[in-house]
Image (cartoon, rainbow, N blue to C red; front, side, top):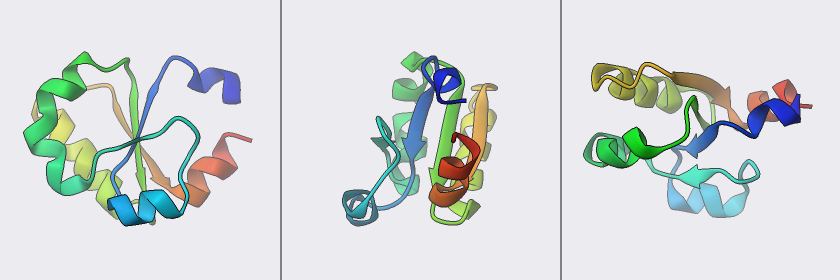
Length: 88
């Protein structure tokens, strides 16, 4: 399924510290508290956008923010471990 992730943008909404400790390959770190201010950046990204965090809570919040701002192709990838499991 990894091939399917070529035409997507993967966003890690965890803190920079968490991101540094380990992240999904090619993920972009945009912490949840910056998502709303960076909507224009998201609009330019390849869709769909898959967001993940540690448990799926912050990524769920990020996806809600994106959808409220008209970015319909936003997906909650859940936690980092979930995303790794689902893309093997």
